[in-house]
Image 1 (tube, rainbow, N blue to C red):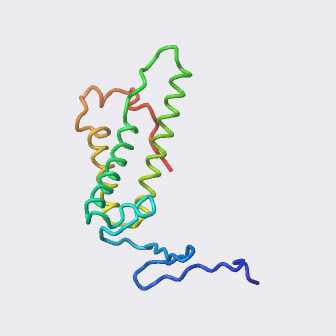
Image 2: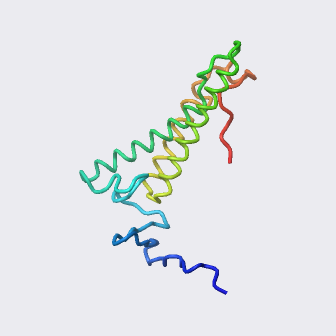
Image 3: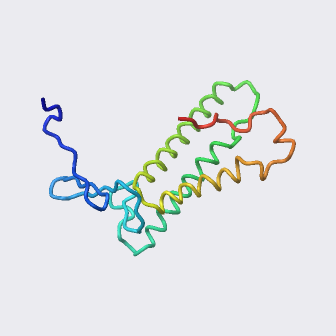
Amino acid sequence: MNHDHGMAAPPLSMNGTSGMHYGKKMMMMHMTFFWGKDAEILFSGWPGRRLGGGMYALALTFIFFLAFLVEWISHSRLIKPGGAHNVWAGVVQSLLHAVRVGLAYLVMLAVMSFNGGVFLMAIAGHMLGFLLFGSRVFKRNMDILSSEKTSDLPPMSC
């Protein structure tokens, strides 16, 4: 009995790419990590082949910044403790959570381009962000020993 409803998975080529037809255009998707500046990250045609490696460098910087921003939001203290505005603080906290999750999903989608440079920049952005905002490197001893919350948002988990 045929359960695929006439749809077959596209075959993999020898270089780990899979092809899909969209109209007359053939779109190639990598299924393994690859190196090179000719990649599509987040948007169709971006960074593309414009300006040599300049747009690719801009894309890598953008991914680094997104990952760094995720770590900053994850370890920030933007909401003042206490006060009678619990509803407002809850709304702001929920908005911060939504922004953090949205940025983390963008980083995840960029890494799914399977470009090695994008993967390394995402890791580097998370690492530097955690080093500056989440690790003990720049905290005073009293901050480390304190049992107070260290950020507005709970840790990210799967």
